[in-house]
Image (cartoon, rainbow, N blue to C red; front, side, top):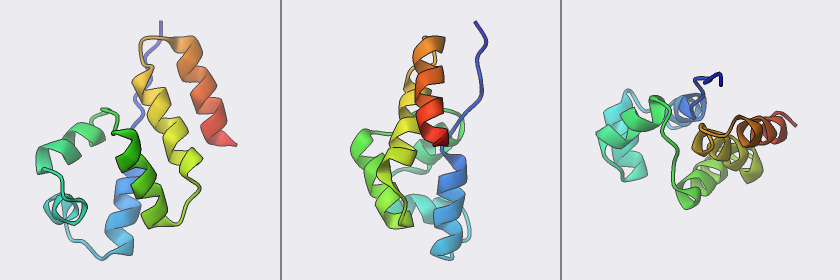
Length: 91
């Protein structure tokens, strides 16, 4: 089974830029999470669905875009499900 490295980093970076945050510590404070949590998400951990939904709303994006990517990350051990969620994400 191939394991792809996917993460929500691009969306975290987009929020940092949109809110003029200088680093991940400021991003963590803005999102009211720990700096370690930001590092985990950047390393491929999934977010809670409500946090993912809120991030999508902060960015003015369709929540399904981020939620589907988040689901793909959660299903790293099931390539079939991961591929399905990635397909949804790319729409």
